[in-house]
Length: 123
Image 1 (cartoon, rainbow, N blue to C red):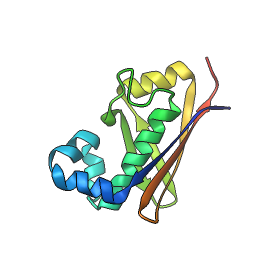
Image 2: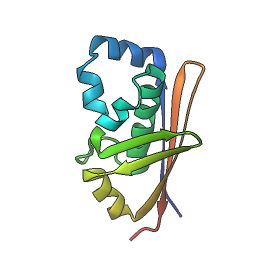
Image 3: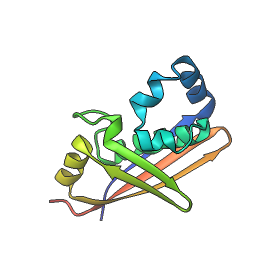
């Protein structure tokens, strides 16, 4: 059963400009060490950002109710995007009965698009 869905679209050029303004602080604020170590290409980081935003929306809150950027760890593996939850995001997923997050992400035409589906059964 689909418990929630989320989508986010990021203009890659705007994301690049934000990274240029805050090259050290912004990546550390938004991404965990494993996400940063995966390569700092702007397009890839914009994709990670889009998936995190979409996942927060799929949990029905966006970045409210204590959810933080580091509560979502996104892994962009060939053919599969994985989201690992921790902290408030994990608790929120449990409240909703979410057992699985399915994500799709693409960068096309200067945009990064993330779509996340939260699956499970409501408690």
